[in-house]
Structure formats: C-alpha cells, structure tokens
Amino acid sequence: MANTNTNFQPTDTIQLPYVAAPGTEILMDEEGNGTLKNRLHELQHAKTGDGHIILVPQPSLTDPNDPLRWSVFKKWAVLLNGIAYAFNSAITGPMMAGGMIQLAEHFRVSLAYMSYANGATLVCQGMGNIFWMPLAIKYGRRPVYLASNILMGVACVWLAICAEKTYTPFIIGRAFLGLFEAPIEAIVPSTVTDIFYLHERGEKISLYGLGVLGGNEIGPLISAYIIQTLSVRWAFFVVAIAIFINQITLIFTMPETKYTKPRPQVLTIEDNTRKWVPTLEQNDISKPESEHFEDSTAVPKHTVSNSVPEQSYLNSLKFCSGTDHSVSLLKTFLRPIILMAYPTVLWSSLIYGASLGWNVILGATVAQLFAPPPYNFASGAQGLIFISPFIGSLVGTYLCGRLGDHIANHFTRNNHGIREPEMRLPTCIIAVVLVFSGALVSGLTYHAKTHWAGPIVGFGILSAGAQMA
Image 1 (tube, rainbow, N blue to C red):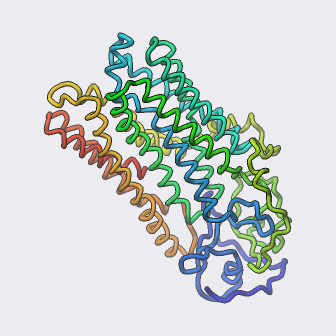
Image 2 (cartoon, one colour):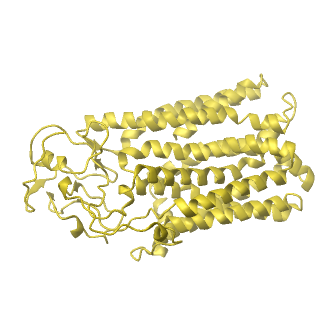
C-alpha cells in the first residue's frame, strides 16, 4: 500500500472536481502523493486483494457492535440464514406445479381456475412489501424475519389441511402465504447491505438470487415426487417443517443487522469544497439515509478502538433491539409510491419482475404444457424439468457475481478508483442475450413439438439470464 500521512489539519480543504450522482463512491485509492491521495490512504482498507480497496462504508472505529465489524463467520451465518429464509419462501410459490392436476380434480375446477391460487400468492407477495419493509426500517430486520417466517409456516400448515377440503379456504390460504413471504424480495438484500462492504456485495447478492430462483426451481422438483408418492398435503407439511427448522436458526443466529450509530461519513460542502473531518463520533446521525456525501472522513487506522462495550449474546436474542425514532412510518409507507415516479426505478422494477415472472409462469403452467401429448409427463417428470433452470441459475450466479465484480472493478480502476452504478451495466448485456435466446429457443421448440430437450434446454438458458437480471 502507498505511504500514509497523518499530519493533516482539520482545516484542510480540497476543491471538489464534480458533484457526484447518488451511488457514486470512492472505492479504490491510487499510488502516488498528494493531499487527497494521502488522505485516501488513511481510510480503512480491505485486508484482502492488493490493499487499494477502500471499505465503503467505513466501519465504526469505536463500536464492536457495528455489523460491518463482525467476524467473517458471523457474517456468513447471518447471510446463510437469510438465503435459507428466501429459499423456503421461494419454494412455496411454484411448489404446486406437480400437483395442479390432482388439486383441480379434487376441487372440481379447471386448471386455469386452479392457477388463480398461484396468482393470489403473487399479487399479495408483490403488495406485501409495502407493509413489511417500513416495519423493517423502523423496528429492525430481526422482528420482520421472525414474524414473517413463523406466519409463513402457519400458512403452509393451513394449506396442507385445506388441500383436502374445499377450494375457497385453500385460495385464501395462498393469498395470506404470499403476504407473509413478501419480505424475501427486499429484506435479504437489505441485510447484505447492512453487514457487507460495497466491494463484497455483488457476490453475496448473486447467492441470494440463487436462493430465490433455486427455491423456485428445486421446490417443484422435490414437491413433485412428494405429491406423486404421498399427496399434495404432505408437500405443504414438508415445507412447513423446513420453515420451522429455519425459525430456530433465525432465533439463535440472526441478530439485528440495522445499525443507526455514527460511522465515518462522506461530507459534501455547499461551497464546493471538501473538508477532512478527523473525529468520527462528531458526525450527525440524524442525516437522512438518501443524502449522498462525496469525501470520506480520513481517520488514521491506528485509532481503531473498542470504547463501546460489546453486546452480549443474550441481548442479541431480543425480538426487537430498538426503534429508530428518526424514521416516520407514514413517509416510509409512501416512499415506494414516490420512487415509482422515477423512470430508472420503474424500469428496474419492470426488468426485475420480468426476469422472475417467467419462472413463476413455468411453475403455474408446466402441467398444462407437458402433461398432454406428445410429452405425457407424470408429476415426477414435470418436476425434473426444473433441473435445467436450476443449472442455468448456477451459471447466472457466477456471471453476475464474480464475473460482474471483476468487470465493475476493471471500470473502477480506469475511473481513478471511483465506482459508478453504471459500471455493472455491461454485465446486463450478457443477461439480455441469454434471456432473449432462451425465450426464443424454448418458445419455438415447444411450438414445433420437438423432442422435450428443446424447450427444456431453452428454459436453462433463460434462467441463466434471469438470474443475472
């Protein structure tokens, strides 16, 4: 690493060369001398790699309870808990794929009418985050994880009972299931942001994406054989058991990750200057989360200390660790509606929805597509179809994770260490090609009634691109 210089005065200022857009961060320092470069060298850096990656955000220098300062083991335990939570939730959506015909015959309704049960889950899941995420912002992530997960397990037990009753309570149960599992779409990425640095998040988000799409693909595969061997009822019971097991791990190994205390901040001064602020704890913690700061507090690394007592394990098991009084629930509820007025947010939401939507459509229609001639697939064979999308998801996980990080880091180095959100867009070119090719192959081969390998290989290519999106 370059030489460091700790002789800065708090009155030092540097002219801002530009006004940064939201999401722009100084991620890497450069070799050489100069006031700004020396100050960047004084920031806390990643201990791996070439030593030039700056930790974004900068972790607290005095508080060992800052999730960014947790051990690698603890961070991975939290992440795997979140992925298991998302995986179990994702299973519940398309798990009926192998039992649609049996359920339609039992309830004496058409397959099209039976697909409304999937629709009820999806609609409520899409709307549910408007309710859940403001609570996660106000009261923390842990209460939402615990409450939504236990309710999800109860809903699966309800569905297991109703699967042998009548259609109306069954579809009502599916609607509530969608409401209870809604947080998986946002709370796990929020947890990743809470505990990992910017340069680590690409790979972690791709693993979360694998958990969601993997659940969508492995779920129908497993449930199809459970349905074929036992019954639809037992498919829901097995998922409920998995959810209750995950509830135990969430209780004991999923501490609160939301952190509201001060950290080294990036400060933008209105008169187009940057000031170096050497005292971390003087930063104002009441600043809104949406505010962007451009220069980072350059505190020498040797000042790191634990002046705040570390939280005990028993205290970490509290259902709710505290309330963020700076957050207005009403404003947080309204925030998604306001954000949808931004074209970039609306476009990103549509792309994300489309990338996941095809998998849901496949789960809802696989019986109608492959049960009739010329394929004549039984429930177990219908489940095996999802092996191809799962393999595609594994490929997509690598492409949007490690490969995506390498591409973004390459552009960051060429941009003098400044990371722009657009530097991940080149990876999306690969996703567009894969999604288009997969949709084309699967659609044309199924329309032509080719060998079953044609559409199924197309599903795998499509899934790889969807995972990247």
